[in-house]
Amino acid sequence: MLLRSWGIAARPFCIRMPDISSYVTCPWGVRGYHLHQRVAYLYYSKRLALPNLGFWAEFICESALPALLPSSTSRLLALRSATMLLLHRAMVLRLQQACRLKSIHSRLCIQACSTNESFQPQRPSLTFSGDNSSTGRWRVMGTLLGLGAVLAYQDHRCRAAQESTHIYTKAEVSSHTSPETGIWVTLGSEVFDVTEFVDLHPGGPSKLMLAAGGPLEPFWALYAVHDQSHVRELLAQYKIGELNPEDKVAPTVETSDPYANDPVRHPALKVNSQRPFNAEPPPELLTENYITPNPIFFTRNHLPVPNVDPDTYRLHVVGAPGGQSLSLSLDDLHKFPKYEITVTLQCAGNRRSEMTQVKEVKGLEWRTGAISTAHWGGARLCDVLAQAGHQLCETEAHVCFEGLDSDPTGTAYGASIPLARAMDPEAEVLLAYEMNGQPLPRDHGFPVRVVVPGVVGARHVKWLGRVSVQPEESYSHWQRRDYKGFSPSVDWDTVDFDSAPSIQELPVQSAITEPQDGETVESGEVTIRGYAWSGGGRAVIRVDVSLDGGLTWQVAELDGEEQRPRKAWAWRLWQLQVPVPAGQKELNIVCKAVDDGYNVQPDTVAPIWNLRGVLSNAWHRVHVHVAP
Image (cartoon, rainbow, N blue to C red; front, top):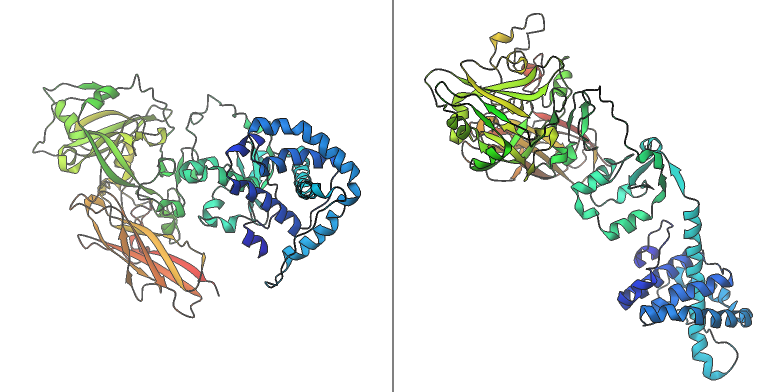
């Protein structure tokens, strides 16, 4: 308690005094604080020991005098040599008297550790025999000697620790990801054991655990508030060594590997497949912001990521009969009027993992994170099509998109949307070249992708290379033989993909992101958070939450931007703070959303199960324990 009242951490650490050149700019309070912290800590932990005279003289000149005397840097530097000689002589002659500091240390230690508030510490007398007129000077000198001894000893420990720095490999660091093994992280070339700090992390243990066994930089990039001097000083207390220099060398790239040139991804992403790369953000990060940061936006790739040169990029738009085909550079696209909209993208397989609990399905095991929201900027598709001579027609037509990503046979990813949606200015379909105010990241379609608000993510073709208008929908495998829903009775022996329409608009959806399944929550009050969204521009008007598996319900508070009628392209984040019922040892939390068409999520998965595991939007359920 005494240490905490002084603002001193209980964990042993090395406190470094500011460099001598910085003292002239330090307020007196800062100088005093540094000395007070070091003296108090060392006395309390009983680590005080009298080092040799060289340490005394050196540290009085380099730490105590600069901290206590008002002087310029040049004068302080000049004081060193003169004071060294004076103090060395004084200490040799007065060593016997100086040793009385040991008894003073004992009294100070007792006083510092006393919990008796009535105890009145006495000021120690540091007088030396000699001329009475010099008594004041010797008091100051004795005090400085004591401070110098304390500071010198601690600096000696710091230097000794640095000289015996341990070297660790990345493999060793990555094996320390739990309280049992220790929780290690890296920053630059330094290695830190933050096991004891995890529970003290202001953002909660789960956030820091995302970096366990790896670098902090990707997370500090998301949360820039960490990159400050006081945070680095706090982190320095937990340093245990350095990374092996050989681990800093970038791995050799095998050019024969079609995925070798894929971009570097954020380590927080939960990977569902590496080749092609598919990953989702962890739930605790997914709804932390209304706009999903680019590095943790969910990634759905079907093929290797192409490396497109923006200078030579061309978008080919096939013209209408009698019209003119276009070959548009990035600069040409920028000449069209720019539109910006906030749109949520959701994969058709979001929450597929819940369907596999009913019966095996074919597809990636997406949890609740195959959904994200961004602010997109680009040219409207209807403006580009109009310039190529296209217009609405009475007969059915489709706008077909082809990406620049392809398989070894040269087959590109493709998809299509109805021409009526593409040509409707109110549908706000974009040829986007910006994502959250930045050029599209490579994983998300650089340099141009399609953004179709309110429609399944499979139609938002990335790395767009070709646009055409056809009388039928795209013949792409991903349009004709995938992303369709079927009855639970249909299996792979009886499925007929031609019998079902391709998914376009998605049904109403919601999920809980905090707390997570299996977590333990505190008794008293629990905060429940999540997201809700509906396809086709339908607004979410309500989210109902239950703590008892659906027997009773409470209405959650909706956050985020207000939604426009028929243009509710983005999700609503929601939360509910509710008392934990007395005596409950566990909670069965459920959520369900309702959109402005009064469509509501089904209560169970079994009736909507399908062999591809798409359109999974049953009530989301989370089972948690209540701390006693």
